[in-house]
Image (tube, chains in turn brown, blue):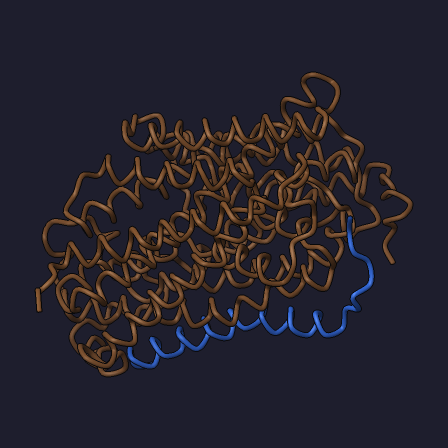
Length: 481
Length: 39
């Protein structure tokens, strides 16, 4: 029998998964007949595609590479962040119960639907577009790097191939194609990450034994407040829990469900996320025991888990794990490009021209724009100009500040008002942008992250202004029931 | 608390936090009637 190299096996497994995503995306695209199908899947996604696309979009290269790298580097206290992500998802469930009834096309539509403010819709639309597009470059970069370390081929080739397949999927069928191909990606990363993890735990290192060993050799690893002070932990709530709760990607997936029951069901994906998260933490602990002094081969710390599999797993397990990472990165990247396209058309161009496009025009523009945008971000990931990293530093904060207070209070509080929504968002953005600019210049010495500060400022100012201003009643048919 | 117990406590806390959205969604899913659909 011919012995296949690690690179050959990885190439076969990763390429065949990529081809399968394109195949599923193209089949699904036959259902797309209108602009609304393209932008929001006609608001008719059923159990399987909605569950799959929520899970696939939620899990990204950040949670599969960056987070375990933080745990590996800074110790168990980096786990706090996962706890606050989960609490954010619990809040999303609460938001979904009422947000679904608005039956929107894009998340910024809420600002006009609830508050009658086209201005706020436009402002949130523009900032969301910029934040999403700049923020997603890192997922592309992860795809290129995984490609180069897995296959020993060039970074640029990895970006070009994954970009081309995403452009085909998104432009063919918008959210319908993204959602159905996400189902497959979710299966690939669940099998890839959980399966390859089981192999490591069974054949290389028992995670509980590893933890006991680490506790004696490196007790500092288990300091619960090593990365975040107790105040820092509370600030994670403002930055991550409120940021995740009403993130534009999840708001979009609330409106895409064909019924409220289907929409609520998508969050049962957290049974799977629970397993995945625990696996990632345990893998990071095992990696710390096996590589106590740093990531081997001079790889950056984000690639500690790929390095673990590279050294200790046979080629097929290594390839399975990397296929899972590629699936996680692509599923988040294509969702973001699709959402950015929808926001650009609906909340920026249509508002600027003063009237909506026809459904047919939305479909055509959506196809061309998403195709172009996928490649533009690809070019940015190849060139990696410093400006990208700079603007990406603002991405999460801008999104976290722009949505939480207006959406959550707008859904659940009778005193919610247009004035509170507009002013709170502007105050939140101002606090965040000033603090972040100081932070990027190395002049922010307060132990509160700029995004947490902006989010807190927006939430508090919304509450204060809401007590002073005249409430804006919700649309009659959507009055709190 | 000894270091290993802190590690186990974190993993248990993470699991419980992840189960909150899952269990909440399961409860609301059972409670919600098929009701309104769109389109």
